[in-house]
Image (cartoon, rainbow, N blue to C red; front, side, top):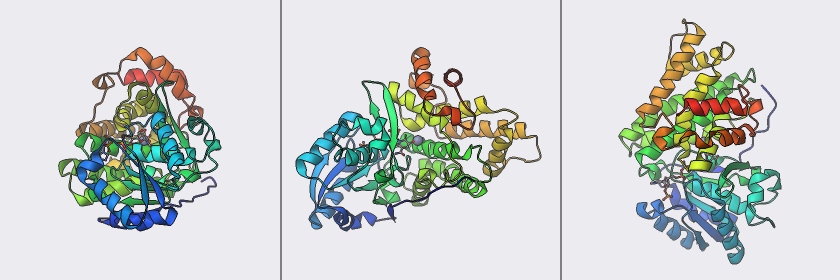
Length: 387
Ligand code: NZQ
Ligand code: ZN
């Protein structure tokens, strides 16, 4: 296990009705909030009214940045920065899924940065100051509610890039599983695939001796496998939504990567799909993941895949490692299909036109340090196998 620093400043308010505390929580950090949200789901659910009422009670003045799109665009960030400056905003409150949260995080840093906020995405080291961020999460998927990352798209350059920094971690996040009852089925499935992918990205590491992290990972994967289908079948199953929500936070808050760091391969490949075709992140991951697994499977990696098969899927450990590994990969694909997620890029209207350029972009994201190092040509082959 490698050395590591683990520090999460985010206070989590978990459970039904925790949003009632929102006013007091936000007031701890400021009195003029920028409320950041998406395309209207919070208005349809009634959460918007509750949020405004709680902020008003606590004398928090509110400026709104609405209409943040899935795969948030840099234009929304720029608009948020402008609103912060014009209104003397001192705390940023995101209410929504990962897209609203990610946009809010870069707005918070951009408000205190003299240059264009896109520079904070391309060069994370420029994030030296940020307004405090508070979140109310409405969809379990990205883990943005408790992590250091934000992913922003620049449609002009076809780039979807992740930035990160300790200052981007929310100060407080409200996680009420009941707020996710209204998440549509396809989004619930995509969110489950996203959580699982975050876990896989850290689980498949070459760092030896991180036994505890691997067992945490397996527990989180089993949680997704148990409760993803349950949430699809009964959207208002509180137990299912609660377990998925808590899994989403721990999948990417650093717990699993501590001492077992590795470059993330499938996310680098998926972000290119979203950058070029604006597809749902978790859908792209579900299509690519089993194909990545097949591509990197070898006699050298088979024992790790077999460990996954035995500990997560309950496969028979007495079989040869390669056999268990292949079964585990088939189980993974079958699970995503059982959630109703597509298995091929053609199903989401992607053909091979941009594969070469996307592969070249993806390979630039440190993939030489991945579980199995990948070059642009390897990525190209994984895209082709995913058609
Ligand atoms: O925009 P609204 O109207 O709110 O609707 C959203 C959106 O259409 C809807 N939704 C969210 N909560 C809902 C709901 N609909 C009904 N009821 C609710 N309670 O769901 C749709 C998708 O929302 P979005 O925020 O885009 O989804 P998600 O949470 O999956 O976030 C995806 C973004 O996060 C990035 C992805 O790349 C993508 O841009 N990621 C962020 C990461 C991070 N910060 O650490 C890591 C991830 O790997 C990922 O890259
Ligand atoms: Zn993800």
